[in-house]
Image (cartoon, rainbow, N blue to C red; front, side, top):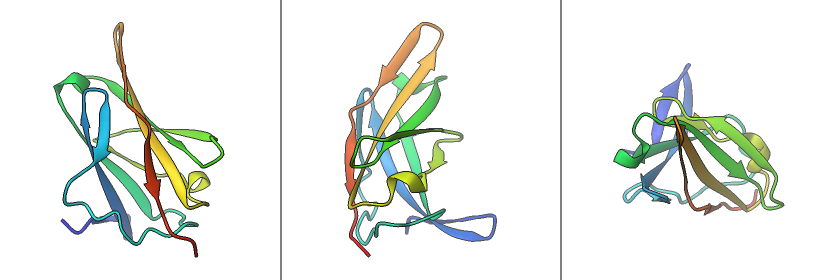
Length: 116
């Protein structure tokens, strides 16, 4: 997969992540190279979950370099990456899933991008 998808006629780039228990990692085979700060409406995160996340309502938290957080609901395993965190050379992602009395969270993963 080349990491691109069609959404409403727009060509979006998908960054794919593997989620196993409380660990989130970059998906092997997904190209994270060539990311450039300042993107708007172009980057999307796609998550592949293990059984620990089954039936959970999931939110992805994205953080900029200063720690500002923006949470996005994950629907059908994906969400857009908010432009507010894409302004500098690094942003972070983590996940939280909830069902009944069960809550699961992941580590915070850094994603590096170049400057314009």
